[in-house]
Length: 135
Image: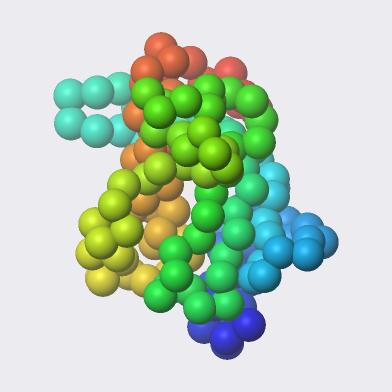
């Protein structure tokens, strides 16, 4: 694991105490747990929600972006929900667009702020803005 990626995981875990590193045979670091957020968008409501996620952080982060999987069963594994049916990973956007979003803040926390939270916010909004998980 390169020092930058390892440091990013440590910083992320400090900010997200309900997430933890779990044993895995996968290359990289695997983090699982409840990820809570509060977000809004122009002319849309503030939503506080949480999702159970599995995050696989490559030793080559940020060159290789993390794989994110929702493991709580709240997001249907279908194309209309932007989930790859072959592996259950969330489709957060094109890799080029995601990397462009990370230019100003390549931290793992920045990745979640700029790439993961907007996706989860949209899913929560699509589900009616209900914040019933953990709040």
